[in-house]
Length: 250
Image (cartoon, rainbow, N blue to C red; front, side):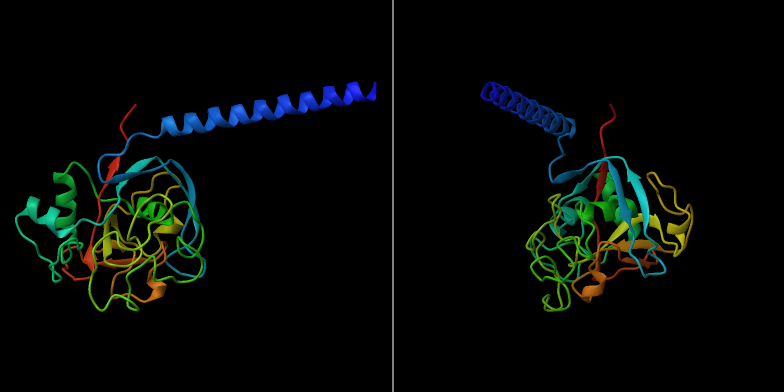
């Protein structure tokens, strides 16, 4: 009798486990199918919440943000692509595969618009750079030169894009190489009043935001939360960009 009951109990457990596994497969399959196919050279950043900011900094108050899904360039815009579209290369370090730099915010915005994209918002950039992590850097809490070109290993110059390790979304060079222009006007205390869903920055301002650090930066500027700012007309061999794109409407 006990043997028969034990066999029945075992069969029931096996059926329950099989059901749970099948449900998991259906869920993951649906999740994969729900992710739209990225345009060439871009990656998909899924919708959802993340904690934006960093404890202990006056302009990085941690807060929860929800973003709709979007696409972002896998790499920083390179000189060859920029010159092909704009007819000139303003960069200081003119080499094959290197990111374009010495572009103003207006030029970066214009380039993205002409290729059917846009500059990412500050929130989009940070979410893409974090790659789903909450650590100090996207790879952990200690600096690692395998993931970034910065003042310790750059030899005072930019480097070809994609030659450091990417994050979990498949995005390269969000730490170091060049600072990247974002769409938002910069405001020191904006995080304290920004909307919880799809924030786009202040309506007006004098300086535009930059993210990610550069070949010239120390390790403290390589975190996804680090904020920098500049007059949008400034040219600097530290300043480049990448583009983003809205998800297709349903």
